[in-house]
Length: 209
Image (cartoon, rainbow, N blue to C red; front, side):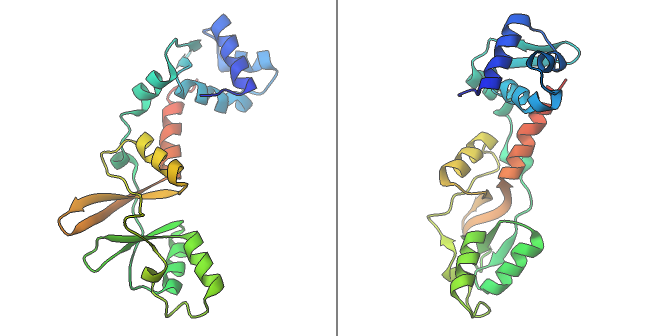
């Protein structure tokens, strides 16, 4: 992990004078406490620092990967997933656009007649089609959706770190959470960048002074 200049300065201050409070670190840097809060959260989550209420920040001595493993490996997709927004593969593109905006989501999961995952629709898919097509009410979503095996998904027992890596590798905003059935993949949830960010921030807040 590469630290920026301010994070490096914070780390050196804590190494030399820890335990030290966030307010004292901010005073040394001549910055507001709120300004350095994200840096402290990153350094704590990455394992460079540890924190104790009413004591302060101190250098943990741990390797970053060790601390991340300690703090995050127990976070599972199933504990943070949200309700999926699903449409049938015969629904029109027009109806899918309406559904996406009504539900305020960036991705729709498409299912077949057996209610199993058959495709994914993103905002880009729908925007691209709406620009080039006038009869959106007559065009079914299965014509434009991303199909298997090009769909990236995860399972409830996967870690959030694993799900986040998949999203970063594929440059997508969410994943369907599936359960394998004899008839196919049943969609039981969704995990988004927002879910993962909220989960990791909750971990950081546990160390907030």
